[in-house]
Image (cartoon, rainbow, N blue to C red; front, side):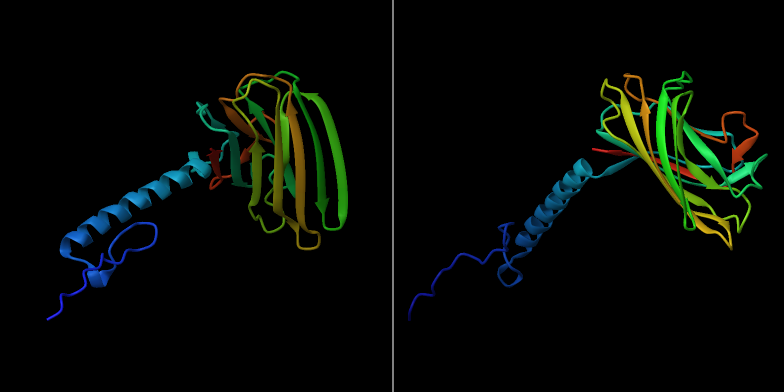
Length: 223
């Protein structure tokens, strides 16, 4: 009688684990542990290159501003997503304007350039040495009262250099006859401290016009 040929068990690619036909109960335990370890490694890699949610706010009542304090200084970039429309004094207008301040700085240290289009009409504007940075216009209660979506990107926010930001806004329903409005803004803060607080305002900082209840603002960090 010939002696059976002894062969090492077949293994799965990369992990070095036995295939099911060759596996013993102990092999399955080993395989399960190795897979869990590998999933943990992948999750860690994703978190290193992905987005981390710093704070998420949904207004239960109208408010004149939205504040994000105590921003961690351990990430590379920031992104803020805002879904809102206006309430209060100017809410009957087709749209109102939103602004921001960094680190509660109300000095004349913000510059911006904006480009907006409503229907087929395009307009542009620039302002220098302002007490806040312009973000974008968002819908009032005119038209069908739809919410607007705004995204603000802030690169290298913790660096001790002057800061730039970009904002995009869209889906502002002004009226059934005019259609949609979209806007793009680039802004500049002539100050060098790391950004640790972001405050959003609507139609200035008087509080007479407010972010409507149901507004949602979420701040993310990019690794």
